[in-house]
Amino acid sequence: MTTHRAPLNLLLGGGLVVLLLASAALSLVWTPYAYDAIDIAARLDPPSARHWLGTDPFGRDVLSRILVGARMSIAVGFVAVGVGLLAGVALGGLAAARRGWVDELVMGSSDVVFAFPAILSALLITVTLGPGVVNAVLAIGIFNIPVFARVTRRAALGIWAMDYARAAAALGQGGLAVTWRHVLPNVAPLLIVQASVQFAIAILAEAALSYLGLGAQPPIPSWGRMLYDAQTLLALQPTLALFPGLAIMLAVLGLNLLGDGLADRLDPRLRAVRLV
Amino acid sequence: MLTLLGRRLIGALLALLLASLIVFVVLEVLPGDAAQLMLGINADPAALAALRAELGLDRPAPARFLLWLAELLQGELGRSHTNARPVAALIGERLGVTVPLALFAFLLSTNLAVPLGFLAALRRDRAGDVVVMALSQLGLAVPEFWLGLLLILLFAVSLGWLPAGGFPGWQGGVGGALAALLLPAVTLGLNQAAILARVARRAAITALAADHVRTARAKGLSEPRVILGHVLRNTLATLLALMGLQLAFLLAGVIVVENLFYLPGLGRLLLQAVTQRDVVVVRDLVLLFVFVAIALNFLVDVLVAVIDPRPRATA
Image (tube, rainbow over all chains, first blue to last red; front, side):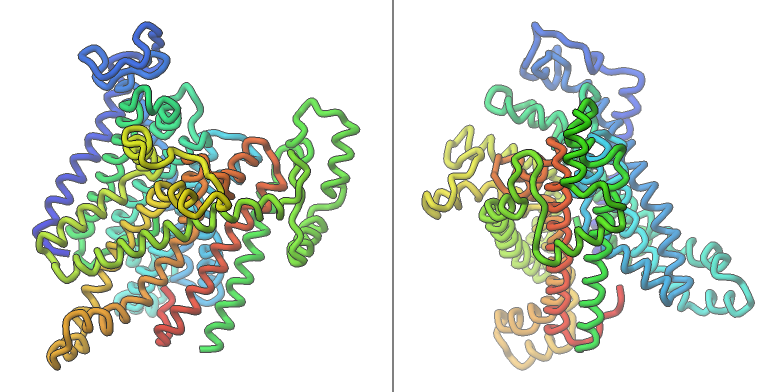
């Protein structure tokens, strides 16, 4: 990657991510209207000075709902990435430290989980436990495990081949100690970059699941669900379909750019693994 | 080479086995059992017992798993609870929508993304590159169902050029069917195209820097021959490997896109089965999606091994 574009990635991405976090934080203390305040007289209003982004078929303020919806996206992203990061780094670190059959087992299982994209496992979980945001987070988080396991393993194998790691092992330090002292600190930058990308993917997945009715249930606002509700009113009030999608796009764009920018900044050779 | 393929085949078969076990276990840990789930909490005990016997739920779980596997190996799928039809027949009717849709999306995204990625590599750091990479960033960030809504708004609601949804069937003419699949295919292929363009650019940059490309240029080969004969060939393995991994997501994307455009395909069937709690249909369909992803991945592995016989680093 060229260096002259790196600051732009980082600035734009960082700015959008701050905007996302600030929207969610702001919604905790203030929204223009209560997100569930029904006002039938003002239903399906176009954007105006009273309702900046218009109102939905119940007369609820779209801007307020988008601000509150940011909380859902952030919460799902944090938990899903956290689950994947904790379990994935442990498994990937173990695979690299032990090699042999442990490695084969971890990599083989991760191949299988890769064949279950979040939407598919969410459908499977939903038929047993019913729809809900917890199931959505679970499905997205499980899929993140093999992603982080692979990234960690590949990078850790590189560190294990280094002289200092081999020396530490030769001096009698166990696999866990070497992993903790030498491998993880060196893998950390890559994990940060990958976490940023997975956060973006989690937001997209949560939106898709909510759109299918498998995520957050009404009246809790979620961007994907707002788009689902907007679809039947597409001809009547197209702006309803515009703003929630724009919110998703800006959040995802920000996280992706931040990931790219961080990768360039931390180590130009870093590259996040990306399938979705 | 053959041992590599043998190992991959065994790996794929093990993955299939493990995947079916996962599906079975997830559906097995339900509160109550499948019969209870389908008939509801207030079901008539006699009806419950009858359905349990029909589904074989009176047998222990390991026996049921083995029985299910044996049936699958004979190509026998279950029977839908909601309309009592064999799942195989339900799938058969819908393949004519889902397979063309996935292929259409795949062709669109590949034919768009690979040339654009190569163009960006050849114009590295110049305007063309910046534009292609910016478009790819946008393509990565746009949720597919939102893109679908915007396309419907523009091409169906405002302009009226294309249908907003539904599928006329192939018997009514290929033109009408393809027109109905165009917006869904664009929607489905966009994310894939965005990633593919990035990877194609990176692979082409690496390939362009290779010595043999310099030699090819030095001996006076025309630029198209250099690109097709030397650069494309050397990026093919990388691109194919990525496409193989992406296929599972393309299939999952079908679930969203078919519901967005009201297309009577496998994805819509699956979501309907989930809302109707038709456990047998969900079980068989999820397994079908996973099987196809694993099988296609295996085929891609074989193809990549044929194109690039150097043993791959286990990445």
